[in-house]
Length: 296
Image (tube, rainbow, N blue to C red; front, side):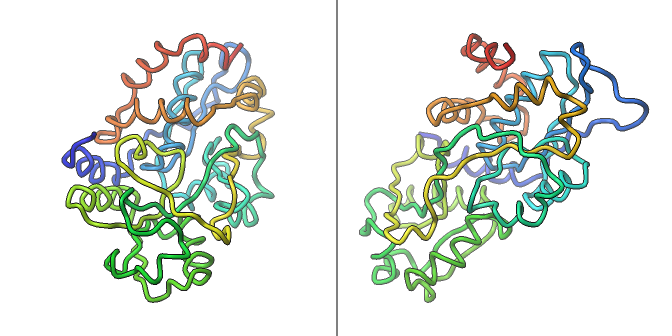
């Protein structure tokens, strides 16, 4: 199990925006296959499925002769920047519910590349020995959780779903819904479990924390958080014309929950520093045949 110190260090460091910007000066160079070589991927620091897929494709495309940077921003900035052409790619749109409002607002200025995982799920998670198994039981047991639900960023889709559907749908208005950041939520989750206390948090799968802590997802009989979602990749308008070969590879990309969980775990130590190069290189070496197939 990851130590409390590791979780707390991850929480503190991952809250910082770690930015690697590509240069826009002068004409864009070409990759060996004729595509525009410079590609910028927007990602959200602390959102592990987004970080994992972004770091993976940064390495894969760099191997193919591209010059790829990952810029860490908040979720709203990712969609605004993508729609304005400031970024080329965002790989982590959860649809139809979690990020549906962003697509409604900015979708006319984006191009959908494809779905790479259709098993994603939002949830309210608790410690495995908590005295409830369902969201329908949470209101009458709120005191056992200090009358709190711990959330993540205010702009996150799961935050909106919790505020608009879960809380009114299950009569949880008397519970405090705390929003802060993903790292802060994970730190509180680790701290409560270490102390033997009950805690309820907004969470999602896939996420590496399920391999570290003994958790259970509360049943959602009214489907307030929706069914399984599709992790969808979008590009700025015109990316397909500028980099048709890279877009074709991205459109064919698929990754199941088992593979993604392994990649997330392999990259997790880098969350403390934002340095993933050695970690992703090691994972790619261990999965070389599969990775080579991404650009075959």
